Length: 158
Ligand SMILES: [Zn+2]
Ligand SMILES: [Zn+2]
Image 1 (spheres, rainbow, N blue to C red):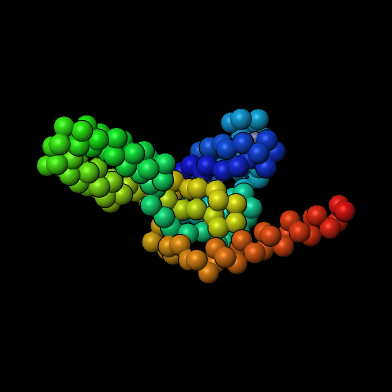
Image 2: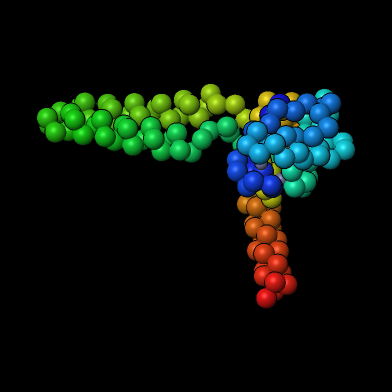
């Protein structure tokens, strides 16, 4: 199993391998150690986030949005070539192929878990079926909580 998270010490994105026997996560960027909450990881998978540690995680496709956008951009650019030569059939063939590649990639990509609160991402975790997919309601609740927290921090400082 591995986790991609924003290190609380150096605030950079880092990735750590872990299993149910690991006592802590170690940041590959700055070496900061982060204790894994007791009982968070078992043979059945991850029950709560190892970083923040919220117990609300959602299931999503391991499909980097940037990759999807890149494929579409490349497809659009490539379709300009036959379009320039008035080859409409070629233009549409390229656009259609681009959309197809996107769909096939999406379907063949594996699943991963993501934390609503700190956006940590978990890959290679067993027992994904016990987690629900993204809920806008939960996401909104966390977003508002986060906004209240940063507001509170602001008023303490000011
Ligand atoms: Zn770090
Ligand atoms: Zn988290």
